[in-house]
Amino acid sequence: MRKISFLSLIMFVLCSVLVTAQTPASSQPLEMADKMRSNGMIYVVVGCLVIILVGLLVYLITIDRKVTRVEKEIEENKNK
Amino acid sequence: MIKKDILSKSWWKYLCVIFLTYTVIAGFLMPVPALPHLHETIRNLYFHVCMWFAMMYIFTVSLVYSIKYLNNPKEDYDIIASQSTYTGLVFGVLGLVTGALWATYSWEGGTGGVSWISDPKINGAFVALLSYFAYVVLRNAMDDEQKRARISAVYNIFAYVMMIVFIMIYPRLSNVDSMHPGNGGNPGFNSYDLDSHMRLVFYPAVIGWLLLCTWIASVNIRTERIKRYFHNI
Image 1 (cartoon, one colour):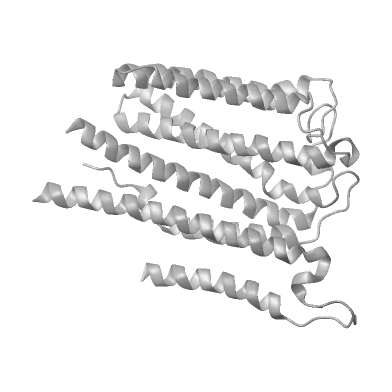
Image 2 (cartoon, rainbow over the protein chains, first blue to last red):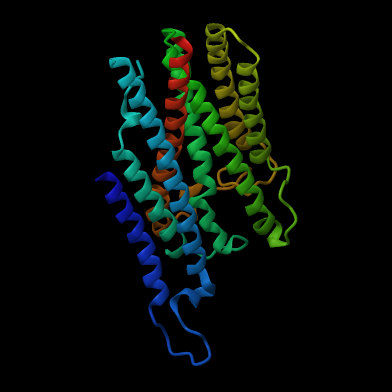
């Protein structure tokens, strides 16, 4: 259950990045105008950092889970 | 028996994820005041400064548990104190490196190429980090566990005082010019550039990074507990 809720959180973040990427924008004729390219392409940087952050957090969560599993294994072995 | 406490709970880790995601998104997109020299690099406030806050916070945790250990020599206090210090060092190094990058482009009018100036805050922070690296060396130099725990707890108190002196006091006494707010005659945060938009990002950012620091430390602490558990069997 926790896994699913966490995955949905990641999906939400990624989707929101993609949605901003695809929003059609202004009227300048020669620009390949989408939101990702506006403001000196700052949204690209935001996207990269969100991806890095999500990646690092997912990694940290995996390590956390691993430790929890080892803790549980120790508990179970002791009860035998 | 492996100890279970709030470090194994997960609600505050969700908080951490939410705050940090908000920091990265809002940190780049919220409006910031236009200031000479700084330009958009003022946004580093949400990242560089938070590294140092996280470091000082986790070193304070370490200090508290070192004092607790000296009052009551429980092995768990030693684990928390030592692993907190190790985690704090990582954040300190990150603070130093991000500071060097920031200074390269915004100090001296952005001419570039200057990343380590004899700024009292930088040198002070470096000395403070060195005194904590000495803590690591000191711990690794001793084999007897109780002796190691006791001596490193005493040293940790000393190192904390050194850190406060070198990061908080020495830069404020110094007359040398500094870009750091509150130092060398510069005003502190409140009197100039932290406007209400920046507060909206800065405070959640601090909370998020502190939680992340706690999280990493908690994984270290729990791993060390398991290691000691097998060692003590």
